[in-house]
Every structure is written in C-alpha cells, then in structure tokens.
Amino acid sequence: MDVLEQVREVNADTALTKDQIRGARSRLVQRIDEGGAAARTRSGHRLLLPIAGLVAGVAAVTATLIVVSQLGAPTIRVEAVPTGTISPRPQGEIIPRPDPTSGTTATEPFPGTTPQAGQYLRVVTTDERVLYRSQGQSWFYEWAYRPAQSVPLSAAVYRNIDTLYMPGDRSGVWVGRYGPSNERVTIFSREQSTDDGAAWDAMLPFRAGVEEWTYTGGIGGEILPLTGSLESYDQYPNDPAALVRWFHDRAVSFGSSEEEAEELAASNIIDVLTTNYAPADIRAAFVEALPLTGEAEQIGSVGSVVTYRFRFTHMSDPCAVTLSIDMATGWAVEYTSRFDRIGDASVDLAPADVPDIRRTFEVGVVDSRH
Image 1 (tube, rainbow, N blue to C red):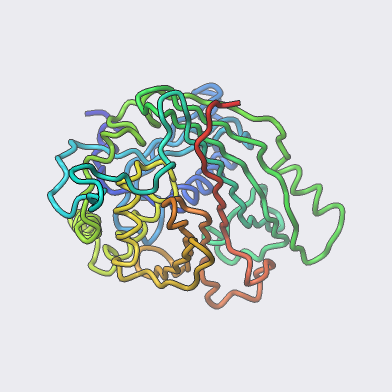
Image 2 (image 1 turned 90 degrees about the vertical axis):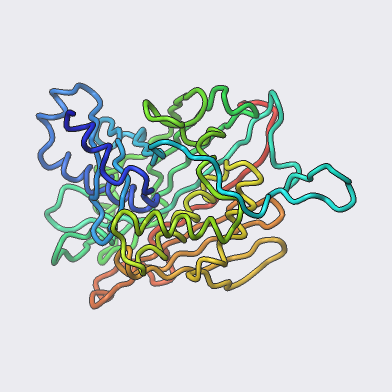
C-alpha cells in the first residue's frame, strides 16, 4: 500500500467542514509559497496534496485531495468525497410523507425545486471572507490561522463567485464555473494609503475571467460514489433523529469525544445543506434534523427563511456559525462563521460585526447553462 492509499484509509468516513477544508487550503498555500517551488517544478502546473488532519482541534477528518493551481490562480477547489462501502439506509420515518389527500401517492417535499430531464439546478455561491496580512510576510491568512504573535497590518474582505449546474439527470455532466475571483470589497487598515491597496493587489490580483470544470455523474474523482450522485446519499437515515445519531456515532467511532461528536453532527448536517444540491427528500430530513442537534438556536425568521445560530467550542477553536434556510425550498440562503477573538481582539482590524466568512446562495431550476 503506497502513501496515498494509506492516507485514504485515515478517517475515511468522517467529513471535513467546508471551513476546515478552506482553512487547510490557506495554510497549505502559505507553505507552498514559502518553500514549494521545487515541488511545483517537479509536478508541472498542478500539485496534488493529501490532507489528513491538518486542522487543529478537530479529532476526525477525511483524507482529501486538494488541487492547487499556480499560486494565486482561482481554480483551487476542494471536495470532501465520501468513501467506503455504502450500506442501505436504516429504516425510520419516511420522507417524503404520504399526502393524506392523494391516496397511495407520495408528495415530494419542496415542490418545484427538482430539475427535470433537460433542466439544471443552478447554485451560485458568493463567498466573502476577511483576509489579513502582516508586516514582513509574503502571504495572507485567515484569522483562525494567524501566525503566532503576528499583528495584522491590514485586513480586507475578498469576494469569489462559484456557479454550479447540476443536471436533472444526476448521471449526466455537472458543470462548475469559478469566477470572477479575488474581488477586493473593502480594506480595514491601520494607515489608509494607496500602498496598502497595491500590496493586496500584488498578493491577490483581481481575476475577471471564469474558469470551467466538468464531471460526469457527480463531483469528485476516482473515489466512488461521487459527491452529489444519488448513491452518495444512500448512507443517510431517512429519520431526522436517526440522522443526527448516525453522524454522532460515526464521529465517536473515529475517536471523537462526546462533546466533539455532538458538534460534528451539527457541522456535517450544515455542510450537506449548504451544498444546496441534495435531493428534496434528503434536504427535508436534514432541515428537520437541524434543531434536533442540540447545538442549534433559532435566532430569527423573515417570511419563510429561518436562521439558526450554532456555537462550536470542542471540535475547533471557539466560533459562532449561522445558517439561514428557506423552509419553502429547503435551500440554504446564507451561511456565516466567525471565530472568537480571545485575548487579542484589540489587534483585529475588522469590525466585530463582520464575519470571517459569509456565503450567500442563489438557487433555482433553469432550462440551460447559458
């Protein structure tokens, strides 16, 4: 068994949260910038890096491959791909539930949200996050990965756009488009100057172009089932309470404490919902599971959109996460996260009401990719 095969065996069934993956990416890219020139030369324009447990404080992670393009390019994309043999769904409450007025037929939850043959589900994700730079450092970082004793010289909010087209027939061709990227929205600086903007532009130049990728049958690579394929959801129980327990027990089986497992269950449920491409019956179960995690606190509602807040203190450094779900569609509308500033809030240049990460989602069924 070679090294990569061994890596794939490490916690293969435990999913990374998207923020953990992105954080690992940030740290990896920094390492590449500092000393990876030789590795980039050996492997050409792309470098495959295995990730296994790079995020501090997280007890169970999935071994995942990250594709890093040339430094600063917008094609960095990570997918946590489920691995292992898929077992049939445990029996439980069946979703969708029978419609009492329709005899023996079942009504799919969230009508109008499932693309038909020839149609696509389009998911546009706008990602805005706060990045920092310090004097004498050649790269940026997120707050959670701030170098020890480093005092930020400047902070900036950057925006990236990611568009996904999922075919009505999931076995067809999935198309992703990344861009525009590296759009600087605002700067928070100790000393406002044109030099500050120029320094950011040198690190993260704006890219107006859009790059495209395609996969057939889902998202992923060699490991089956592909993410987003119908088979990838067969592992999940239909019953919301059983779903929470399934994620919890899986985390415990890989060595997580009870406290970590409870938070990981909530985090994994959030991750599936923020993809926005789970089938309607799966989304319904996951939406109902959210308030059952014990980590969710409903903090508001506007129309059909309900917002939950989560506090995570065991699976990672302390942080607050919010998730807004449109209960009429089961689609995520907004996700935010912000790590606590413990003892060093005074050096943070970003306002306290600006989350480290904010993602907004525009989701709908369309007739074409144009």
